[in-house]
Length: 394
Length: 202
Image 1 (spheres, chains in turn blue, green):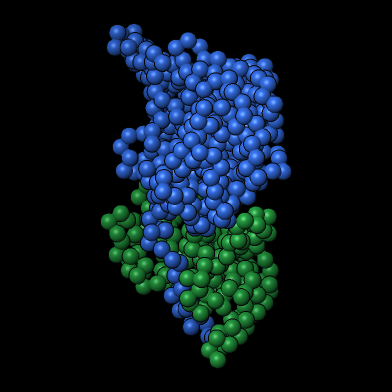
Image 2: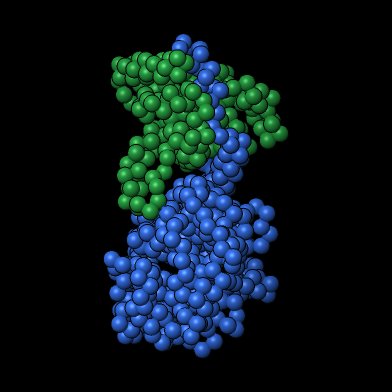
């Protein structure tokens, strides 16, 4: 083969979906560039102009604040942020502030966000879950459950007569649990052996118990009891009354404690059912979300004020229930997600169409990104339709 | 620089760059250095023009090295983003094209090596068959099949030499390897390709 023939052959061998790939990359590059600070032009006017501008700004700010409309603006700002100063948001997601990849769903489908801010659309799925090491994604849409690789290639898919919800990949990697209609079902990681584990379960996402050699699944049965079952033998291991009406279940990373989130209280119980920590909502508030940190020592809690649209993000010590307020926001915050190393909590502040990365570790920095909805679906006219499904892995 | 960039592009892209789309009208004739300067100052149309000019080659080269359309898209996207992020400290006296290609080809090499390791990790999940690194639909081209026989370092030098048209000396600088190593990889790769394609033709 001579050089020219080889060159022509290489030029003819084009990547698949070249045009679509280019347009996807163009959108990502555009968003990344919008989020970058511009290098300023070299100044030729010395220091007179900035000093004069700053002096003018101080004068104007003072004058505005002294007027009734100025005071109104100040009050409006205070009301918006509830006394906690939010960071200035970056206009676009150009990088994640921590390692790992985000799994996101919205009306346009499921997406993976990489640490450098690049995004890959997995397909038109409405709910999704990471496999334990982030090698695969379990995704659901209408009556279908699918396993995908992180590039969006479907490894297998199954269809059910009823709508599919809440896929959850077992820590072993060998099972995927999901709800279909009122049934709780489990399928093997290769898509085989799909079977019903329980009927008439409450619409609460099931939780796999980590750190066990067998595949133990916890769910809420039709009577509101919390049930733990070995999904392979189908043997029931425990069935207990819940101290609160559960809307979320999450096991600690060691599998030693179960976090039960209700509207009015958050309870941490031991595997034997003994209550270890309880945090009750103040009068006029309710809990929206609660997530155990990756080390299991803290709980990030989202609390809603029922009289106003105010939302508080708290961090509660799992040992003694002591709470610290991280942030207060006007408007809805949908969910909280811990970064894989537990240094940050991502608050999906849908009311402001922002993601807030709230620092937990002293070395971490709080930051924010604006215009989230439009970055995943430019056709979205209102924020709040984007869900963060998980942040994986170290 | 532009002329050289165009030499390695297929005819359709060449026309696109020459004529300019609506988005890049007025920027298509500007040099890379002028576009970089404008991009550093925050001009979105300059970034758009740089993307239009350089993305196809990045994507194409990455695809020929990793043989995976999705991975190539990710690699080219990551390379362009990495370049964008580093643009503010880019020395405009240096040519942009080799800098971009160096980022993309090195990432493609890293990806291909990591993939061979990940396959072992996949094996820890016996419920799922290990991913085929090369999708059969992408192997229609005989050349692509033959390239798959080469190791990733050989594929990279073939792509840099015969698609992107760098000299062995430039490839040595891009990959930070001795020139003699480039020449020997090229020789072995060409011998293997000739053998593979010859066997195919028999």
